[in-house]
Image (cartoon, rainbow, N blue to C red; front, side, top):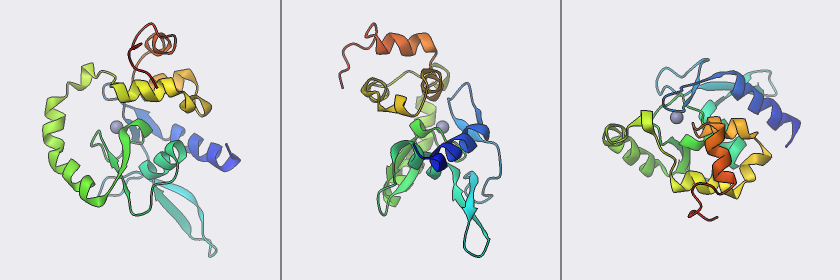
Length: 164
Ligand SMILES: [Zn+2]
């Protein structure tokens, strides 16, 4: 991990409030008034002007790598200011719109308080590359589970039917 990546990760970490109920990392600094996206200062251009990036997009890139050409970063949690990389997916503009349209239905259909891990979540945890960037505690926070639950996945005491 480069110094620049570390600095940007720390900036995200410092400026989000974790919503205990949903697991969302809610950007608590300046947000775009039109679309609600968090804005993060990433540097200056050659004229000394500030360069801003969408906080969720930056978070996606830091954790999962560059956003593929022509794709957008969408929120599976439908919270524009959320920067939890596990709530972010790259998709086309069309898919992004479709997801927004279906959002109402999804939100109603999910009991967020009792949000359960999905097999996809477990596969990401077991595959393990995420631990190169984050401590167990941070990964548990990211998936909104406690450390005991995380460790029992890693030892295979639970979710043993999911293989990487
Ligand atoms: Zn979220």
